[in-house]
Each structure stands twice: as C-alpha cells, then as structure tokens.
Amino acid sequence: MAKVAVATSDGFTVNEHFGHAQFFRIYKLNADGYEYEDIRDAVAVCQQKLGHDESRFDKIIELLSDCDAVLVNRIGEGAAAYLIGKGVRVFEVSGSIDGVLTKLISDNMI
Image (cartoon, rainbow, N blue to C red):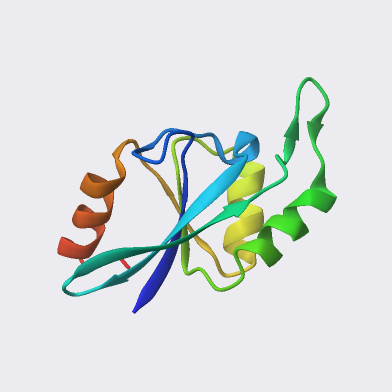
C-alpha cells in the first residue's frame, strides 16, 4: 500500500503549485483503488516575491513523512530536487484527483 499527498485547492483537482499549497489531501493507494485518509494543513514554501523559505521545506517533509509521493500541478526544480533527495517521489500532473490516482494505480507507478 502506498500513500500520496495531493496539492489541491478544491479537493477535486490536482491544481496547486507545490510551493503555494495551503494543504494536502492524503490518499492510500492499493491494487484495488484508493481511499481518502485525511487533510493536512501546510505552510506555503514560496513567499510572494521573496522566493523559497528553505526552513519550510523541512516542515513539509515532516508533514508528509509517511507519504511515498507528492502530486502537484507545478513544482520548481529546486523544490523537486529537495523532495527527491529526501526520498519523496514527485509527480507534476494535472486533472481530476480521481483520474490521476486511477492512472497511477493502473500504470503501477506507485
């Protein structure tokens, strides 16, 4: 069983930039499908016009420490490299959460 964090502003689509996400919805995936687990509030890593606050990366890593992957609409190279370096897979995707999770499961990507 895998667990993924989804950056979404509306709970239905993968539509948030990683650095701007205010919360992540957490899903458990297995061969038969997926189920919603919970929602986790996040402090946005990107601060308007100030760039990244790298101390916040560690808070996000801690927040998502039990997740195998993060699904985002967009993510900068630095943030993606940081997450990957900490063992978190990053998928830059768009579309409905249902469609994206179903595709990940059917393609055995997680």
